[in-house]
Length: 51
Image (cartoon, rainbow, N blue to C red; front, side, top):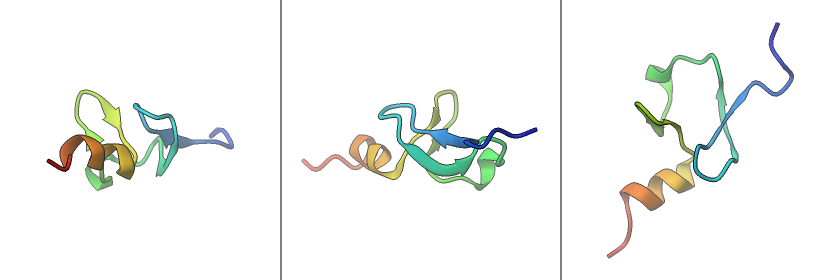
């Protein structure tokens, strides 16, 4: 049985990402293999830092 709150949380900031825990990782955006799910904002801060 799934919990009411079955969403993934960002591994950096802790916000809900909108993806369900059991959703295949191949169909997600901002998932980092070996680390976990990021939210869009944290992903962009890490990979698209302005110079």
